[in-house]
Length: 495
Image (cartoon, rainbow, N blue to C red):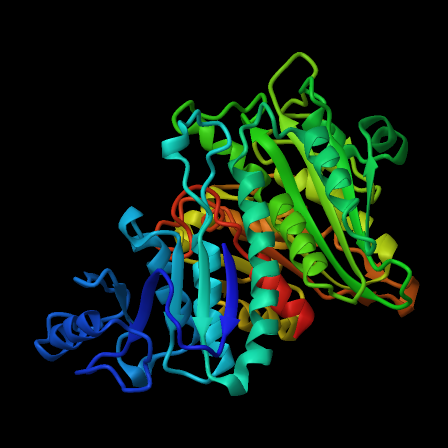
């Protein structure tokens, strides 16, 4: 979708008219509406046939050819940026062929945050994944365009805000594309190639790949163990933005299991097709880089994605194996379906090479997190209370909830309770599985400095198993992968 901003009053295509509850007639400031259509709108409002409750819509077709979609914003005193964002998304959801592809939006607000949030909702919901469908020309939809009519006093600032929203939405859509891609086409080195090709369009970005053979040389035992059972070997993809800049920078690490059978500890067959989404963490990292690059972010950022396909074969790792990771720590493998934490063990330790300001990892890590939080919130663990609060607030600001979870010493003790290795990849029982997984990862977060001068690097783990897919209550998502937390990261990094 292309969105333009204008202070003119001419209305082209379908008029999109967001309204608050209690609106009884159109304000005289709303210009350009055909007379008959204005009468219809006012009659509907006066008769209370459209109550303007949040998320409600009503389409009117004027006898003179004008068209309008009324969009409910709910009570004015309750409205915030999230209200406007959801209303924008509702427009795209409710739009049919009768509305055409040209929209004109008239918002009774001069608050840039609110108007741009409405635009963001339009952009985020305008997504489909039809790459593998054979369609006739009649079935293909033309690209949507929307023009937002605004007060002249905010036109310039709103243009810039919409430009940024468009770039961030492109990152979310890229993340969704990666997650929705079928695993026969989206495997580790295919992801790496896509990343290298993508980087060519931006002078500020470079992408490097640590191949399977190089991972063996480096001693990335976690990545190797998970991916060696597949004919499509693992790799680590490293994104660098503005790497010439001095100083510390955020390092974002993503789990990239492009398909997860569970390995030798084979998963049940039901819904196994959804395991193509197990690379959601790497999709979040890639989407974040697109959002930052396309909006011209001037800061230094590192992204690390740990790509592997977890398959059962004569070459695959086994329960009972002991592996040595990049950090030098050894891990007793108790279940090969607890594989995401193994690749992240190497990715987190690799993050230490870049003198990080902080480290955040994203992973569709545990079913236990879905049991705990459903599809409504991402689990959030951190070794730093202030940093955890910053992430939580960044998520709230863009309506992507990250819920603080406990990182207790008891969980860490449970994960180091192996008789034959430094640690184990599974807790002692079924309880608290998301918490023990986070405690496992904490062991592989590098320290800054050495010896008595060593200090903790702020780190957070975000389990997106319930929010990267299956989040049916997410208004920005119609189907499939959600692209969750690309916007959270953008807000965290740029604000």
